[in-house]
Image (cartoon, rainbow, N blue to C red; front, top):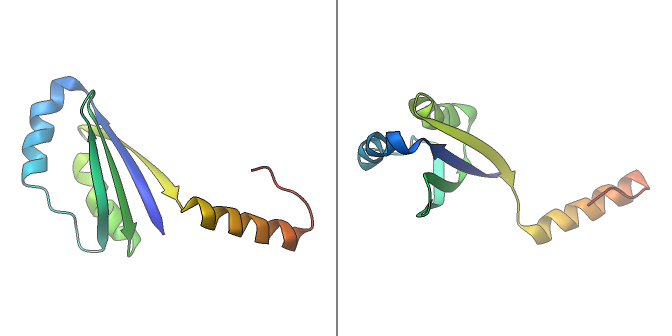
Length: 97
C-alpha cells in the first residue's frame, strides 16, 4: 500500500534538518517513490510503499525530536472509485464519496 508523509518543521531548525537530510538513507523495507520540497515553507512531501511496520518506525523515529510527520494512506483515484463501487454493491447501499 502507498503512503504519503507531510513532514514539517520550525524554520529555526532548518539547518539541522538539512544536515540530517544530507546523510539520510531510507531504511530497508521503506521504498521511497518520490519526494518533493515545498520551496515556500519548511515542508516536504514523501510518497512511499512499506514492506512492514518496522520500516516505518525506523524512518520516522529519528525525526521525531525535530519534525512533525503526518502520514496519509493514498491510492490511485480510479482504483479508489472502483473499490468504492465494489463495496457499495456488496453492502447494498450508497456510501458517501
